[in-house]
Image (cartoon, rainbow, N blue to C red; front, side):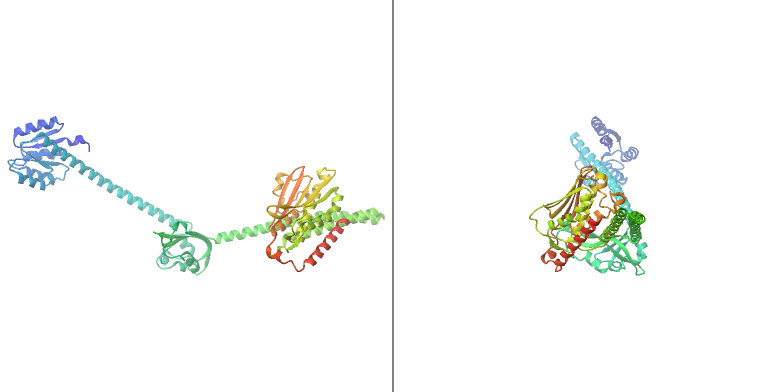
Length: 542
């Protein structure tokens, strides 16, 4: 309340002179003053005006000052009463103080003592009002805080109950203390059947629970301990069925001690079903794509065979040796295409580990170059080998790497065909070199038509080919597959109209395979040599 509201005084005294003198002093000090000549009259004014300050003489006819004090205090107001006494009335003054009078002043009354008592009474009233306001506000704040706590509690309970995830919490003794509605729907248990009755082991595998709560006692550094983890496991339904779930759990701690854990889990049955359908769809799509690609390639080859047969038949019909030779060459070329397609499919489909043996990178590259020199000459391409001297032998699957190089060189020759790139003389260089991060690098560079930027990211995808009807897209797929089986990599740089560079990068190979060479190494060399001779003869025939 404002300080001005305290400047109101009721003065009760049976002596008129005292009333007049004190009224003047009080009014001069800014007080509003009411006067009464008796206790009864003073109480009437008090009940009507409710002044905060009362000055009353202690001895008066009729109701004395003590009576006035009692009656005012019975009204439970903030008003303060100051008793006016004479020198011989000290015992009465003390009695007044015991009845919660604010103060007493003695006659004759000095202004200084009067105003000191009034200020004390005003301060006392202000403190009481502040305390009351604070108490009332505190009660209101407690009510508001209690309502907020209840709101948060209700929200959290609602959040837990309506969560799409199952939520299960256990205490330090592994007893279930929270079991939300999603967990009830998933398992078939009702909350009353689980909370306080079942343990975490009754719902999850015991091994999993033991893993969560394996560390007992106080954690020395809770901040460094991994408190949460997730895994795919199962939960036990009421009927005893194992339901697949994806589960996250958190260890709960208080002052460094474990007090329980809480788990959140999702039902994986629908996800597993959708994943299975997705795998089936992808498998069917892959089968369809593979079938369509192979059918298209075979159709082109069959067309070539029919063309060759037609020319051969014409040769027989006309007894023309040139027709016979040209037709037979067409048949041989298309038979070779069928053989190549079948080998590429087998290589791509078969999962195998490389059969490592130590080999000279220069020797493997030289065999591939020698095998394809005739074909390069037919395409008017200059095929060269630039071998780096002093390369250490590398553990590799020789036939697999040989196949990679043959594929890369064939692609480079095709890219330099004059009818495609317009070069009068195509150039294909095969190099062996060192690489700081790999044991050896095989490099095949051409000055052919190059690869469009939009196609560079597609050349290692299923059945993509830049050769149109003449390609199946399996060649580079097999190169990448064999490189990855070795733990290696394939890199490509290309610029349309200027050519391409393919790099086949190989590691040193597994140490256990390089310590002891394959006992059949000599036989493998002979097989590789035989393969090279036969393949070269086939190329020359075609």
